[in-house]
Image (tube, rainbow, N blue to C red; front, side):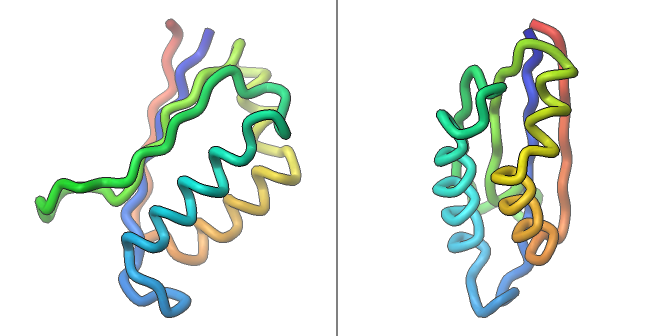
Length: 100
């Protein structure tokens, strides 16, 4: 099993939306992939409520069978649509993948 974690910091005002609105968009659209992208075993998206300057705006915690399943998820058209939005509004991204 593989745990895939991603954190984002969004650009305030990008596409006329706040950082919180971008985080909420990501939560709604990523969690909607469950049942659409068969490789997803579990997925949770959290919207930050920590006011720290160093905090990220949103976090994705997901589980896949292995690295190959994660790679299939990454190229799935439904995921690519969410990723395209993210690239337009994201200032900073960090990720970690590890075996569980």
